[in-house]
Image 1 (cartoon, rainbow, N blue to C red):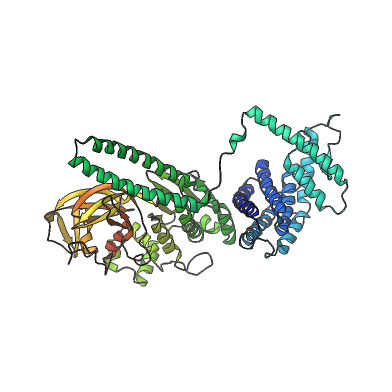
Image 2 (image 1 turned 90 degrees about the vertical axis):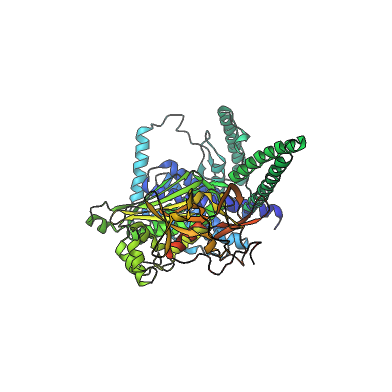
Length: 637
């Protein structure tokens, strides 16, 4: 296969995937608004474009399925067939087959390894009117449409003349398009005995195409738009990742230069060369920041790309479980980093499936509790500061605290004493612990005790947090907070003895200076009373087994938060707020708890970035976060 053909194939697969996403969403919308002709036309155009491209590339199985589905869609938009659940189900099954064909093309370069006979038979049955709807229903609908058209649009002498035909298909001379021409040629190709000679077909196609081009040019001149409309190009993600990595290295170099420049200004303040260097570094800092923001924006995409699969999934799952669920999507234009979007897809699927399976009741149960038969599932995304917040809410049965307590005790996840000291919201969030599940039976939807743990693990991987709030009988709400990007973050640099740590600034609430007498002990744990609230304390020196040079009379407490939970981190000194580039720890150190990664400071030192979510959980569980790890400093023996 030539490079040019490979490029065309890659473009075809990318465009087809976008079309399939659109088709899944539009069909779900069409079921709730079957009279929407614009929606039907949009679906038809997408299917038609896919068929045309597949035909050009010679994918016969894909052409066969799309052609049959397109014929049904044409009857729907012409009013010859009603939008019935059976019809939509079969076309959605065809779309699933198209997805399999696309996967086959991507892997093998052909579409011959996927059988399409079964779905083709179903599509033919729908096309011939053999569905579960009442006999002649779509014929009657078509008759009514034709009758209404005849009553409202009297035939004039000029319009009574037969419009031109191309391969047996009527063509509107004033609104002819390239799609209509391709339609006609495809139809001509499928006929066993063409009614029109090929030479005549080509002549008519040429005339019709010229009219279509002339009409399109006139419309462009009127609207004042031309070739400037198409100003986008496709770029592979790995290229953007490479650019982002280079920007990260540039940020580290900038930080190092600014640090050195600051030291030179302190020792050679009167030197004009040093002053010029300072001005140049300030300009470099400005340009680097702008470049970083520009690169980050190129990696941003709207969250609707992630949410595109939700309408179809909710529809299929609610039908399978015999429930009625209405999905409301809000904030689909909210943008987030491509790497964050890739990681958040699976957790959202888990949460939506759990909400429908465990949360929302059946229509009978809802009626018994005075609710409407249709459940509500709402997914809303928004940007709050430097975070993306996603909220998944349902109006179902909620989470039963008694079940959560019983399951947590039965599995030995918590003790009676710990449960007694927990707030209701903390108890609910125990469902994120590994192996926890309140499902009474295991199904293929949920209930194996791994889903919610996977949710938290995947979200933590991108430095995000997840919290659940629930009211029995009223529903549940899951709140996910994600960083805009996971490559470069703002961090608070702190010192413990001779070691330096970075705390993500998004987790920091405040920092207070205390004395040794302010620290109290309750049940063997150090706490601090801060504004009428008892705050559990965590000593980084103990967590990372840093050799101590002696007890200090004064120190700092950095208050960090994870949802409703807050913990005070005891440190010796607060250094500065810096922009740091997160580097992975590597396979050898990847499993160390309490560490999210590492960075390089302006002095060229390697600094650990703390994983606040794990530290908070570990102090709640009463265990050290980094058992067995000694943080060795230059002065340590």
